[in-house]
Each structure stands twice: as C-alpha cells, then as structure tokens.
Amino acid sequence: MKKFKINSTLAIFIAMIIGMIAGCIFPTFMVKTKFIGDIFLRLIQMTVVVLVMGSVIEAVGSLKRGEIGKLGGKAFIGFTITTLTASVFGIAAANIVKPGSGIHYVGKLTSNVSTTNQSITEIITNFFPSNIVTSLSEGNTIQVIVFALLAGIAISLLQEKQSTNKYLNAVKSINEVLLTIIKIVMKTAPLGIFSLLGWAIGNYGFSVILPLLKFLAAFGVTATILLFIFLMITSAVVKVNPAKLAKKLLRMGVVAFTTTSSAITLPTKMEDSENKIGISRRVSRLINPLGMSLNSDGLALYLALSCLTIAQFFHVNLSLQQQFVVVIMSTLATLGTVVVPGGGLVALAIVLPTAGLPIEGVALLAGIDWFSGMFRTTLNVIDDVLVALIVANSEGEFYRDIFDEKITADEFYTKGN
Image (cartoon, one colour):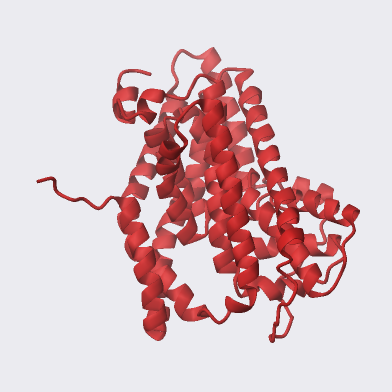
C-alpha cells in the first residue's frame, strides 16, 4: 500500500483554508496570533534583499561580454508586453463590468497614503544608490539591483583577465547558504500562512469585502483570464504541456496568493523555476529578481481597474484619451512599488491625480487591499517565471529533462552542465 504524503503545496493550501475558517469562527483569537505570521514573514524577508543582490551578481557575473545586454533586452521586452497587456485588460474589464457603479460605501473617504511630488528625473535618479549599505538596510530593491548589475559586470570583466573565478565562486557559496536558510524557514510556511489568513479574515471580516465584491470578482476573473492566456502562449512557444506547466507553477502561486508579497515569494519562485521547470540558473537568477521590481502586471491590472472603478464611483466619465493615460501611468507606476504588501495603494496614489481623480479614492479600496494583493501578487510572480521560461528557451537554456522529471536539477548540474 502506497503511503500518502502531503507535499508542501498541499500543506500550504490546507493551512490557508483552515486559517480562513478559523478567522470566521474565532476572529478575536486569530487576530492575536498574527505575530506568528509576522515572524514567518520576517524570517523570509531577512534574506530576500541579500539574495536578490547575490542572485543578480551571480547571473551577470556568469555571462560573457555582450550576453548581458542580450538577456536583459529580451527580459525587458517580455516585461513591457505583459505589463501593457495587463493595463489594457484592466481598462476593458472596468468598462464591461463597471465595478464602481452602485457601490454603497458608508465610510469616510480619507486616506493617509500620499502621492509623490518627484519629477521623472528625480525618480530616475533615485534608482541609483548613494550607499549600498543604506539601500540594503532600507530594502530598496531597485537600487540593490543596480549595484548588483555593476558588481556582476565587474566580476565578468575580471574573469576575462584571470584564469580563476574566485569572486564568482564566493558569491555562489553565499547564495547557497541563503537558499538553504530559506528552505529551512519554508518548513514553517503552513503555520505562518494559517496565522496570516486567520488574522486577515478575523480582522477585516467579510463585511468589508461585500460592498466591493463586484470589484474583487472582476479583478480575480480578469487576472485568471490573463494567467490562462499567458500560460497558453508560453506553452505553445516552449512546446510543453500547459497542464503540466501549471502544476509546476502551483506552489509559488499559493505562496504568492497567501503572503501577498513578491519579495517573500522570490526564493520559492527561483527554486521551482530551476528545480521543477528546468530554467537554467543563469537565466532564473537574473530574470526572476529583475522581474520582482520591473514586471508588475498584476499591479498594472489592479491600477487600471481601480482608476476606472473610482471614476465610476465619483460619476466621472473618463475620455478615451484619459483612459490611455491611465494605461501608460499604470505601467510606469509599477516600478519598485510592488515587492512588499501595501505597495499597491502607494502606486494608486501616484496614478489617480494624473487621471484627474481624487486621491481620496484610495480609501475606497484600502479596506480590501490585502485581498486585492492576493490576485496582484499571484499574477506578478507567475508571469515573471513565464517570461524567464521563454527567454531560457530562446537561449537554449530550458532543460526539458528536468521539466519532464527524467533527472533532478542536482543530478543535472552535478554532471557539469
């Protein structure tokens, strides 16, 4: 008789369901258990920024001169296409479903989320770190990635002059330690996610969801349709079974859905990209961290849908030109605001004034931001991997034997591949 074994994906999913049920039945108790989920999140977060830096340095340092721009260019094209597509789908969904019409909101529309007064040049300047230690301590992933890109290029150039690759080997060793720490922490994921979901339902309850159920339904359905389209296109390009690919994306999707953080999901995303899907380490460790900050189609979809929902609520008719501005701004505002829970509200506060909409509209959706973040993050994370898979396939670095489970990733790389 075969012994039934619960894998990590199933354990997390079960914990999510039980946590939501517990939040309904024992709301006061589950709110008090939030510290357990917070500890889990902190244990993951403590390594994420350093892992982003190490992964990008390793990926870029492994490239030869000329390959960096080639890989980065392909990734950028993929990110731009998916993000713009998501923005357009958000506009279309809002015009079809009209989630802002008929909302009976009884709360006071005030918000402590503020927009930015920075110019485009100031925003671009702030991409570059003045002190990498400060960037690491503040968790500024875009600045860390810029430093990591330069450090990786430096290692790549040094390797052309030296026979040894001691610098790259040192970075690889640090990355292995960090990934091992994360594997240990992920053993506690079911407990942490049980606590977080129980807190979310116990604290907010379903009463805050009901007035905006139409918005959440529109968002969830549109995100699912986008995921399906991107999955089918990727499967056709790479020539794999879409159902099998979807199964391999499931664990990272569940982690993204329950934690609502692209940064916290990054280690799981990288591990499954390399060990389950068969994306090369070189491609995975460059594109997945880059995608975390630069490919935010879940957020782009949310911003476009939210802007039109708020316009409908305030009875503001946006012209076609104004909706086009929303598409562009929803794409641009995604840079660097999505890696932690709550980043969606900050980005929304940036986009609303550009569309001539009151920033108080943020308060309309603030109560359901955790639940919106579930769909946002899942779409962000999975589409990062799909872009990485297409790039890996184009570079001849999609390893089908790993995908087809004919060989494990460890066995593959042990053979010197």
